[in-house]
Image 1: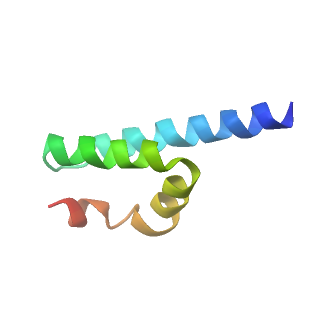
Image 2: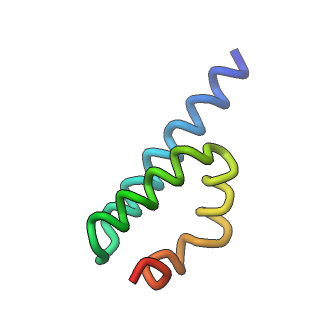
Length: 62
């Protein structure tokens, strides 16, 4: 049961992060690449996104 809750939280955070990346004002290919990297790296990608890259990602992708 606890594993399902952890999985559900990860799924919700991943979807939220992907939607935030998709709304960035940069090229579509770069947004798609950032989303794919986030999905491949799973929890590590979420941690990096929310603690380090969230505010800087638009600047990095330009």
